[in-house]
Image 1 (cartoon, rainbow, N blue to C red):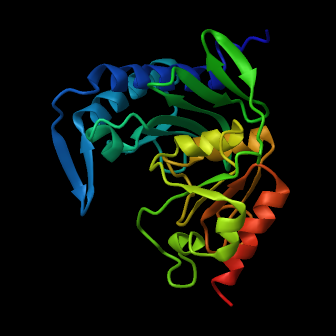
Image 2: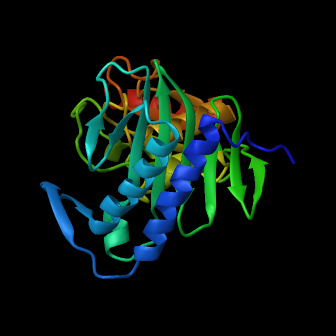
Length: 268
């Protein structure tokens, strides 16, 4: 079994994500204070506690690095070459109503590239990780290479706002496309754990709208998909973080092409 270097950024990302996941798991099911952020969006005490734990791990190991946390905001130089992106509990509403579909995301951006990332599943006992070149899942003390596959035909579509490209593109309209129903089966799990599942072969694709540059939610999943060999672009097939933005992460080129054609149908 190939071991991950215990001093590497990838090992640190995995360790930090696991530490956050332990907090999320420990606090599950208890009474949680809510902190309103915007209309329809809130954090819980678990979000805050998990983020503090993750940041403590990162700062102890890499005190000179900048950090952006979903709950605490940014610290360090605005133009820092190395910046950690932390989403301590992706799927807060799921978690608040005792739904276990959540993820913990940690990613390192160096200049314009994500060079290490991890997405932990607090309740599945897994952490998906990448060093920017390979993508693995860690479970029961062992690592297994991620292998994307379109065989499930399951496609997760993020229906949460905002919708910056409406009415030209609306993710919800994919579900009404006749071709979608013939070829795929929709899923809406409301956590970016589903992006890691594309890399792992448990989803055929994931689609969302919006500007994903330096996103604490999506950086880890995108890095996992790229390292696993998925086809990853913006919603119109353009390079990520350009043009209209958005994301189509597909297990293979054929699945990606089919979804891209459905997106084009919205503008015809």
